Figure 1: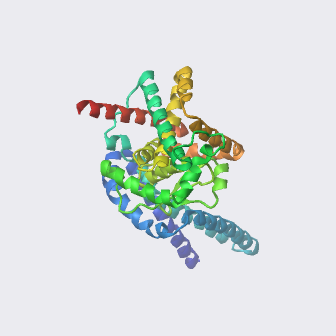
Figure 2: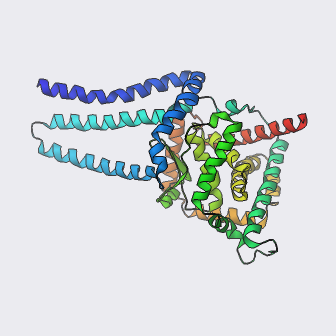
Figure 3: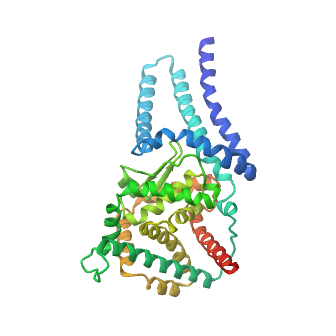
Length: 391
């Protein structure tokens, strides 16, 4: 009996990591300044770089196989304890205890890793505060001006991609080459891995301007073998804290991928808010040397800005949309058709789960918080205009 009691107490020790994580989370919630200075800016970059070092060396997403192994473990765990319960006459209480404590131990350790590699960063200072952006209400005219500027940039960068693929003397898009130009262009430059390594280089350059993005190791974004499954779940990319990897869905049109890489790299740098990760993804792309990367970033920003304008001035939004080039419209139509084929209950369930996850981590508006990116874009535009005026 004494041996059994000792065994049970040993099992309870595995709950300590989870208790520590809960305590750290409670402290972080009430002390964003200290969380930012002590953890997010000092401890997190080093421990996450050390933890993610080995996975970063793999030429594939380690995260996807961790998920597969975990699912196999869950099935095996359930089968093992069901069989043990059926056969364990006289010891079924101990079998149940072992099953529950094993489950709680996995949750405890998993939550501890999550907190250190991701969760505590939800309570740090925002990127807007770190970068000195002032968020404020803006007029419809300011929003429209932003949309017009982004539309011009989209047309210009898309034109560079088309010209590179088709040649400077090409005048016709009737053969459909322009509509496929982003994918052809990306493949000619080496495909996914070229853009993955350039995403690291681009965020390193951006970190010189915004030191909060600095870290010892940037793990390059990885393609996911099961990308089609991600499309069914309406997931373009995912930061996986247990391997510190930025995982990218490669199943859709390529012009969306560089911005997604930037978004997931933002999470790797410790900025977990979705609106700010989108904004950082845009910043990572917009000053890149590669036109397709810039096109991807401007497209991401335009999606949010024109959506906001459409809600307050539909006619003006339509007029600006009409200024997009035929090649840009073709890209956007292709993306729409691609996404449409995955609409259904799986995508709805995934979005509901994501909404719950964001709220659980104090993004109280859930997925609606994505719209705040427009305020950041407007703040950046104002900051740029102020600097230009001073000069």
